[in-house]
Image (cartoon, rainbow, N blue to C red; front, side):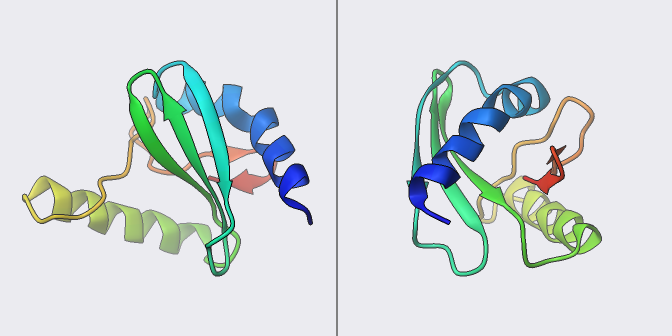
Length: 100
């Protein structure tokens, strides 16, 4: 899979990600080729910069558990990347068969 195809995939799911997580209007994004198992992007919005990860190597229940642990650590003041919750409270979005 080329970087162009990966960026095209993000273009397709950006509207759904914006509706789900509400990060604000997307100004731009960049595919990050540095991930080990997952596809990663830098997403710039009018409310800030976010990392978007398409999970491909971990079962969904484990992803939710891990993100919940990160949220708890960040909430307790420990320097950890706090995941952005969807309007439903979920930390994961399933879009077009992809977990993000």
